[in-house]
Amino acid sequence: MVRRFLCILLSLFFCLSAASGEGSSAATLEDVTEYPPAEYTFKKSRVASYQSDTLIYTIESFTLDSIQCYLTKIWVKDPERQIRKVNAPWGTDLAKPMVLAKSVPEIVLAANASGYITERYPDIPESYPGTPEDYYFTTLGSLVITDGEVLRYLSGIPFYGLALSGNGIDLYRGADPETVLMTDPRQTWAFFEPCAMQAFGVDLLPETDTWPLADRNHRRTILARVNRNNYLLLHVRRNNNAYGLSLHRLNRFFSRHFVTEWVYNLDGGPSSALMYKTQKKNARLTLLAENEQRVADIIGFTE
Image: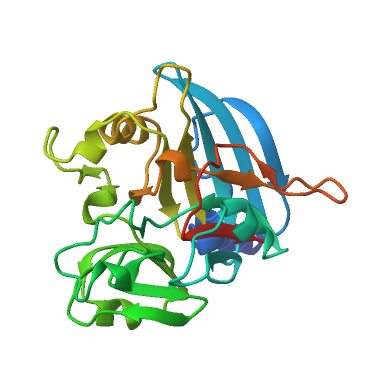
């Protein structure tokens, strides 16, 4: 009888232990940041890939409405350290994306990023003080930061764009620059104010026929965040007589295939560029998408 009682107690002990073990296996940060996330069900023809303990990427080629596109799926272990921005000479000139990418030997993957201002593209928001000449060859945005150095800070003028901090890349829509600075950002990228395409599944683009840039078929560079460690880069190319895709069409593409925190339209058109390095010995950066035009800055991913 005593033996039977002891057996029952032991059985209860092991059951409780097992239940405790199941409770402790709840999702941790590492579970959430594994590559690729469950949302990456979209798979097409692989062009290139890279895998290390700190960086993973896969570039896939596919067509959307007969237009060739490249989708790059990216995982970085430490985004604050591994995601870099490289500027062209500030206020004096623009530079080829490949030239900027090669200036940081650690860069494994890179793309064109912010929009910029020149005599050819003089789209300066009315809220900017000063004259157009003050902003030639610089990126758009009331707050410009590169590697922690503040290059522009227009107090009281809202910031529309992306900022990298310990939380990864965050999207800001009309935030006070001081609020952004409180997160101790390392880098910022910005383009036109309406370039935020969607956030948590909500379409943020201006309505059709209200913003020509969103309506036109064009070459594109689009960045999306899945979570702190996982990002998507979409490059849309020009095919013969077809000139690309509209932002409205691409918003539907992201909504159908991915669960993202936000989707953002970076500078596109002739500025579009996608550069990657494989793990082959002595591998060099390879240019995959067009690179016809100089740009103000790039976004790069390093080991």
